[in-house]
Length: 484
Image 1 (cartoon, rainbow, N blue to C red):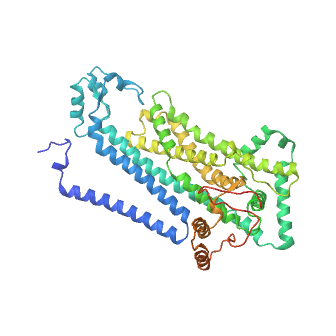
Image 2 (image 1 turned 60 degrees about the vertical axis):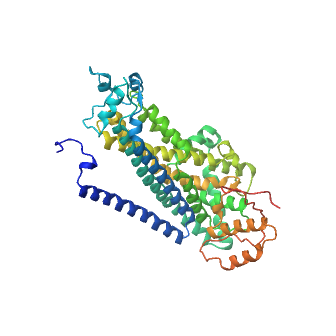
Image 3 (image 1 turned 90 degrees about the vertical axis):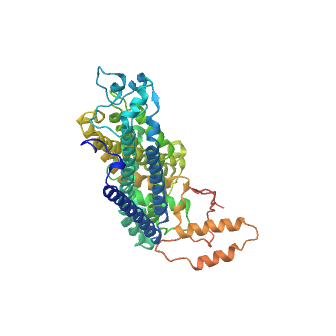
């Protein structure tokens, strides 16, 4: 008979308990899987191919995290039997260990008031060799819980990022409608009026002549009125004139929405360099260093620099128009860091992941060790980290990411999202058919055009010859070559 308080294996656990627990786990897993599948089908029906791909990328990340968790579970007994010298177990501890007068094996054990099955046996196995286990079974299970918490928080933060970004860009729809609802001379006067407002707001003033002062103004402008109606109309006109001059009525607002969705696909994933950051953080989370506290300022600092840089690009575009006496802004990669707008997206990706990682780490420590754990540090530090995490999430999702969606169009390249989904697939198929010798590309393309679904979005005419030549060679961007 098993004594009260003694750990029980499945050999001595009632079968109805095992059946109930397994049923609950299976039901929750099936509901989650069916929910994601239905969400994917709904996105496909709505023609949201980019969001569907982002969902698939998110499922891949969850699968990876699940595999990591499974690997930890399967190999925990083998890992716990790896023995190391006692002195190695006393370096770089996240919490300061209390001094004891017991043996080295008892000194190594964490005094947390609970034991796992076979943990004493594993400790005795290493103690017989005069060593200690590399990590205990309880430590491996706690690490397993951390992987699960990271997955849940990452999914929640990704969904929040997308919802806030779409909510911000949706406010720009009325500006696009104000251009669509005016015709002829009234429309030209309307656009010209806001052009003058754009140049006045961004160039006039003695402080605008000093680079340092311009950066300071750009820094504060990202918090309020980061993109005004005059900014939107001026950037829209410059984009259309430079990239698609044959289509003055192109729906720039819907293009920005598609761009945000395509950028979101890049933000969702957990790249190798993000995993490297996780490893470095866990390595440097040493008692007395306060790594967790100081690192919480890094995403905020990077976010403020990115936001100020994007605002400064808009100001530089306006100054270039005034200096060159041009009619519209001229997109150019020279305005971006290292002449590459993609660098900013990498930084936004890192900021969002680091923020979600820190919040996940907080909840993991709270649920695993309690609020009074030494890893939590001081209460003031905890409150500061939580407040900074909320600020970074809202500011990045609602302000900086939409700002990047419009300012990134001021580079020398535009993205495949300039086309609607059907048109992009049609063009890519047509290019592949043209490269195939002796293919019947023209007839199949004509049939596809006849069956093209009707959408409310303005389409770039494919058959009509335009002033620009487009080369579809890169999946990430479409370079604009010189006019012919």
